[in-house]
Image 1: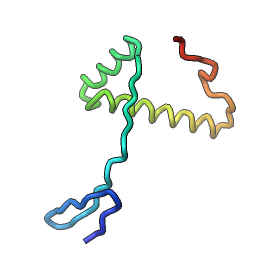
Image 2: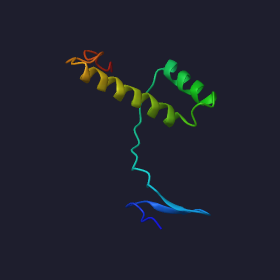
Image 3: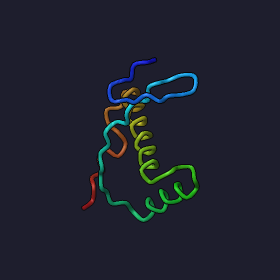
Image 4: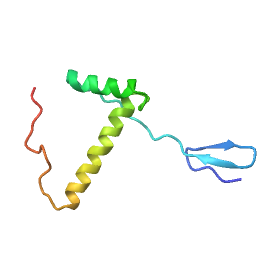
Length: 88
């Protein structure tokens, strides 16, 4: 039998057992969105492509991280929207 990873559990199968890594700890962040973004997110969930609002937001953040990586690799010192500030 395979030894479990720290924080994981073993799933017993009929032919084999394998470790399932534990879910990483999650944080809760509260934010305000424009009505347009709220409608966009709701439409993504309603389409069935995403299971929850959190899944839509995580997918969007992954794309932002990837965009930032591409900009860093291309040698740009400024990111798009670097001059924008949150209007309060």
